[in-house]
Length: 267
Image (tube, rainbow, N blue to C red; front, side, top):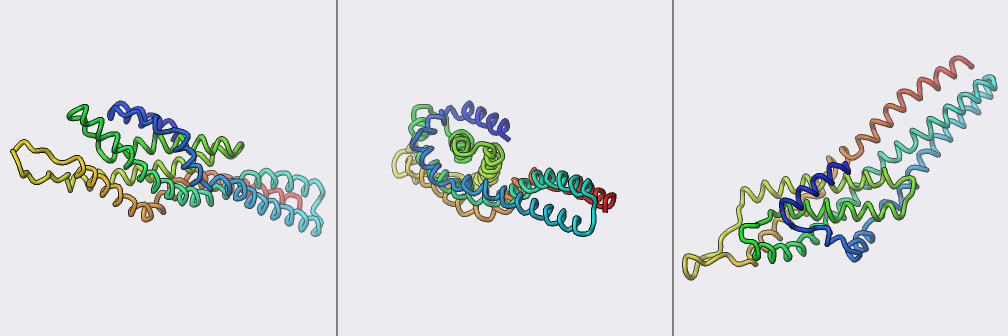
């Protein structure tokens, strides 16, 4: 995912000519930091489900002991069960975290879309200096998302989490990436169906549309995009959770038969 975003970011900077990195300043990072509560719950989710699996393994080991299982069998079952719990618990916790990541991602994208409006003001100045350098609203949203917000969030999470920084970054970064991808696809479709209107000509035929009208059209596209964030959340959450679900399923189908075999041999 990281390489994909970096590649897309490089393409956008080259295609638009905008130095999006300059907007990734301390003030912006601080604003984003105030939005992210995801990292505060990450450790809790993982520890909670790991503890549940460990308790189940402990209870089963004690029950087997009361039924006369040999010490060797109990110790072996316990050791394998602990390894199983340390793999299965975090993966289940990460599946649950995927939903939280998307919820936080939606909040970030709403603020990000407002931030894009501010960037648009700079773009209008740029396009005046470079005639014909019109930049689409979708590319502006992509640039702010991939070059400003996602890297800033990664920086914040790395500074607050240690062992869980990588998976948490994956979930929140993927959530914002897929939300951005879906929203910009809709924006491009809407923009193509409803091209920017020209201002009524009240003077000579060479009169041009007012810059303010372009801003209004752009703002309308952004505001419409905000309304679509919620309905996209479920599909995005499913995509983000796929790696954790695969790991959970593989571990389940390997771990449970091994534990069952140990029980059957030593019962």
